[in-house]
Amino acid sequence: MTTAPFSPAVSPSPAPTGPGNALDGSRRRSRLPSWTPWAVAGGSLVVSFLVVLVLGTPTVASVVALAAVLYAVSVTVVSRVVEGPRWAADRFATTMVTFAFGIALIPLVSLLWTVLQKGSTLFSLTFLNTNMLGVFGDMTEGGVYHAIVGTVLITTAAAVISVPLGILTAVYLVEYGRGPLAKGITFLVDVMTGIPSIVAGLFAFALFTQIFGPAFRAGIMGAAALSLLMTPVVIRSVEEMLRLVPNELREASYALGVPKWLTIVKVVLRTAIAGIVTGVMLAVARVIGETAPLLLTVGIVTQVNWDLFDGRMTTLPVFAYNQYSQGGVGVDRAWAAALTLILIVMLLNVVARLVSRFFSPKASR
Image 1 (cartoon, rainbow, N blue to C red):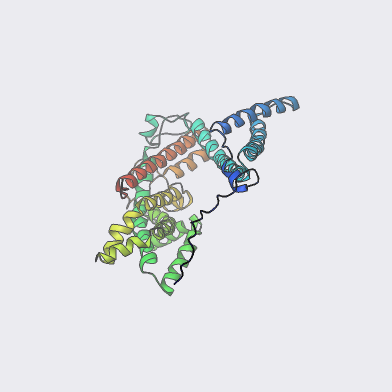
Image 2 (cartoon, one colour; image 1 turned 30 degrees about the horizontal axis):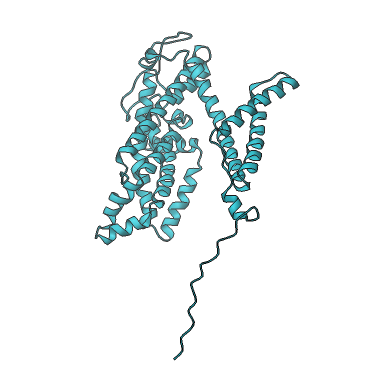
């Protein structure tokens, strides 16, 4: 019986290191300090200002545009020399995304600044708690209290109609819908998303006048018109949020013996509550500024009307349109009404954030 000769275990030789090893070289490359982008941005602004000053009269737009180009080139070159091509590509992509975000902010900031500047002329507590009853010509009195009440009532009524219908439809499409019926509903939702607002107003006008007569005007007509515009937005946004809920959560609930309807209520909807609230707020913001359907269905009055089912009402967009068309001090009232509408939308967004924060499932610690 022969035995194999003993051979000692040979450990694998370490990977070669040195300048010729690309992997080791990339690992040993140093990183730029965290203050480098700020330093490059400051230097780009200074150089840009000096260049524009030499070429002609400097303006904010020209200085910022040239500084942005200099910054993108400089930070990419410096990163490639110090950190390597992969980090340079990453910094270049980050720079482009940041520039795109800044460009997208320009019209938003410009709009907010214009509304704030022109709307603050008449905006006051008195403007918010008075109406236009007895105000004629170029009188500076009067306010938007009646328009605020009309906007809140009509938008709330539209949300009461649209939100349950939209959520239930989205739940059906995601959890139950299969076959031609689900495809037909999806197609109709897509069509409704693109209909003009005046078509929704004409539909509500025709429906209510056929039932109650041609002289009928009420806030519920405007709410019905707005709900036609709001419902497809709610359906689409809620549907996408429900599809993002992992199937593992549903399967875990089914494994514990929980019925499907309770799984949807307790697991699926609670997991997606933040996205659902955001989608509802997007739908509210979509309809709260509509003018054409409300001009057709609700009209305009100069005093407060609390009854959604009887009489004309005024909303902030219709009030702003009417006042702007009158000219004079009405233009200032229109800008103040626009500022009021923006503040209401911002307040609703804050409330939505609080709702999603307190009702969302708490993350484990």
